[in-house]
Image (cartoon, rainbow, N blue to C red; front, side, top):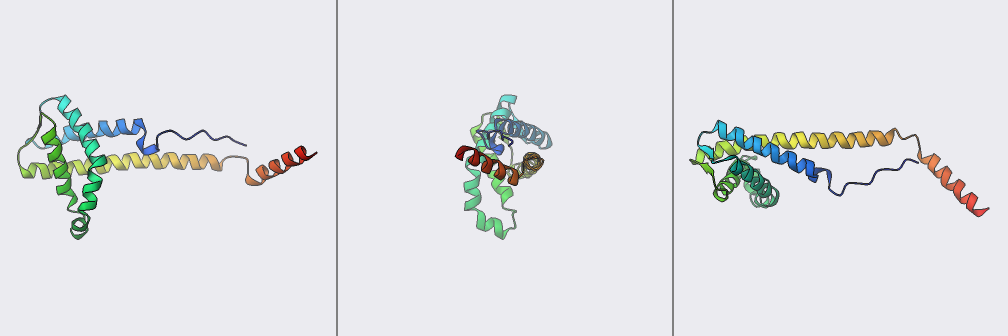
Length: 164
């Protein structure tokens, strides 16, 4: 019988590697967005890094609550209300992090749209790699030469040996 390796302490989606990947992608997304919108500025790379960390924390803990609170209007607008919600999150992060500035409402909305697209791509990339790992694990279990009947036979054989 083939022994399976123990499960990780972290779920697949919350492993330290995935968290680090999300942080790197957020830093890249913030830098690219700041190059696309000249009215979105960072004072230093440290403010970009701090913004990416804070954005990750806000998206993890506060955004789900905001999504639930705005669910009726999100359904009514067919999802378009998520863009101003992302803008609000960017605005909150820009007010907390020193050296992260926006000039104007439309800059925030445009940056929210671009950051939302980057977030979609990040989630698509990370979830597709997770799905591939689960598929590989499933296929490796299917290749296991031990079948249920063989295991059942071994268990019966062990019981007979103990009885005699």
